[in-house]
Amino acid sequence: VSENSDNPHPGLAAVVLAAGQGTRMKSRWPKVLHQAAGRPMLEHVLQAVAALRPRRTVVVLGAGADQVRSALPPGVDSVLQESQLGTGHALAQAAAAVGSSAGEVLVLYGDMPLLRPETLRSLVEARGGAVASLLTAQIAGLSGYGRILRSPNGSIQTIVEEVEASPEQRAITETNSGVYCFESPWIWDALSRLNLHPNGEYYLTDVVGLAVEEGRAVVGVPAADPDEVQGVNNRAQLAQAEATLRQRIRQRLMLAGVTLVDPPTAYIDGTVVVGADTVVYPNTILEGRTTIGEGCVIGPNSHIRDSSVGAGCRVIASVVEEATLEDEVRVGPFSHLRPGAYLCRGVFLGNYAEVKNSRLGPGTEMHHFSYVGDATVGANVNVAAGVITCNFDAETQEKNATTIEDDVALGSDTMLVAPVRVGAGAITGAGSVVTKDVAPDTVVRGVPARPARATKTRGSPVAKGRS
Ligand code: UD1
Ligand code: CA
Image (cartoon, rainbow, N blue to C red; front, side, top):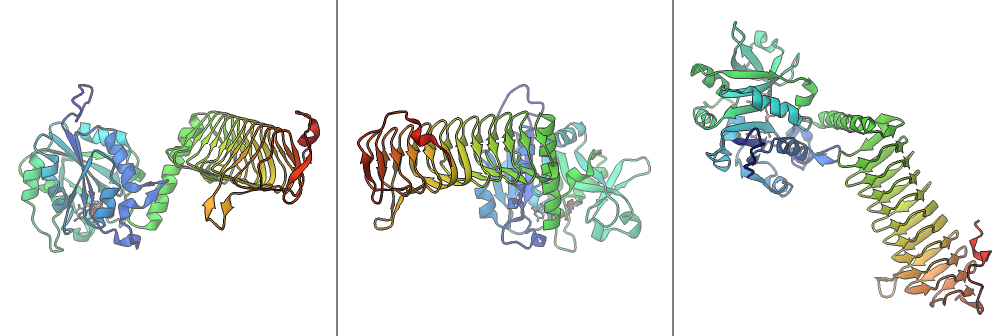
């Protein structure tokens, strides 16, 4: 609980209704855990709410409560609505958890991932001395939304649900988005006075009529962008929300100096950081906790997840997962960096190069169809075509480590049978099967590999020819 004087709404609490089954999703997962732009819908909602720094945030759970509860971030409370008796009943479940110290209560749904903090803030501010403010949207036609009924002088009278509305009322285009700010403790008393509807539900919307009967004002706040209040009820609407969220992310990145050559085909999560002057080519997916430095070229056809890419890198038609690239690294086409790959400055990976749980030192090159796993590779090593670290021992079922020191040249088709170490400046001949450690500056060849001659001159150019 922050008592900071710079918080304009120190008495604000938030309640997110998320107990509904979400039947139309046709899913075994709770609706609010379905992802839009890389994060559960509920997380988007909670993030928008958190921007207002409420003293308390309570999520009302029902269907799939255990799953949703375990997805809640720290500091967010939950209550259980045992049976889904409507939105009014759902909010009432949160009364004790919100507590009597709250002065106002923001209420919204867990399936509205497009809501922006600014919109919530303006709703809270618009309430003023009224007992409630509610967010409205202009939506024509059959929409499932409640209609806002106003008196001749323009003040809000009541909300009528579409199923209970007369044809004239259905023609009203001003609809209830389901986002409210209520005065507390007024709202808790009002909820206790709700009547049951014939469908067995208590409607939260009925508190508007109760307020008006008491002569208390209710303020309607039109949503600037009706898209923003679009709730997600089925997978088609989920796809629309996804598209809108992704477009917002692209817009933010482009205005921050990132070039997206074909914006609709750049799929970038909101959590991803991209530096200025980076160019993202078509069909590229950037996910999770990914950071891309300045001046990179990413794509076409690349997929990067939970990775750190330095400045001036190129990643073309490749997959990068939980990997780190320092500056000026070139990857692809058709490389696969798996978890724990760490490529130092200036590393060059070419076609069909796979690296897992390995560090490649500065300037090391690996141009064609090779596998390096559980290895530490030094600087300026040349890994020729077809080199493989045989890290898995089928007899012991263990993964073993390979160490390749600086300036080594591994000839084409070298098999490194781990655990094994190749000393600095050593050379392996084409087709070598290295089963024993190789001393520095030694040339080995054959199956199994044996020293071909005692030493080579350190730094000799013989090894650096590239196929
Ligand atoms: C509700 C409003 C309607 C508004 C619409 C906007 C009421 C009676 N109607 O419609 O005016 O236009 O939202 O989307 O409030 N929930 C619970 N527990 C329950 C019932 C619902 O937690 O017992 C949650 C659901 O998970 C959902 C939200 O409340 O997130 C709204 O429920 P939903 O059934 O979609 O609302 P509607 O009745 O269609
Ligand atoms: Ca709904």
